[in-house]
Image 1 (cartoon, rainbow, N blue to C red):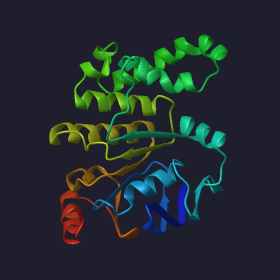
Image 2 (image 1 turned 90 degrees about the vertical axis):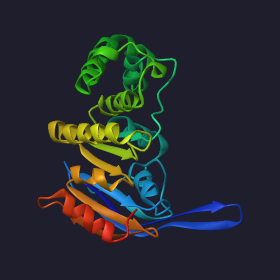
Image 3 (image 1 turned 30 degrees about the horizontal axis):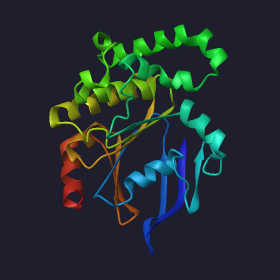
Length: 248
């Protein structure tokens, strides 16, 4: 479904060039829940951003359904990110002046012209309400972000990411701002959405306790993919293997 081939990416810091990705190949299957783990600075978030067209590679290709997407123009990439892709991050990026319902309705508003929006806003409101109810926030529709807990804000961000029914959800450290219990709840919620809606999920995390909810785990180090594991039963065995491999 989504394929990265020989991805290379560097960034300039003052006079220095920092090599972040050094020839990464990765295939993602439709409906899969894939976790990417690795130490800070290993390139896992950069890889996620390239796959989601938030950034462009210096070399290599990214393809969706066998069509290159890394060379798309700005407007086409915007359209892709507003319909086919969904994103959640460690920091929730909710608009503080809007309620939870208003934040979840935002992708629909962005995807319509002002004229068309007035004719479709009721449907968008209904869909946003249903999504908030599905993530357990039906009672918090009219609360603003400052009135929500960290876990509730992340649930709102998940509802916003899924309201347009994307095929792929990119989750970059989605539990990094949460305590252990809330983080576990969020990943269980993502797993449930993965199964119920058949949405493909790519999650970057440093928390090995959470990867047991995945179908497959790959480990990054030094800008390269070093190894991958599939679950064949016990998640605890997979965590032990990853720890022995030196992942943090």
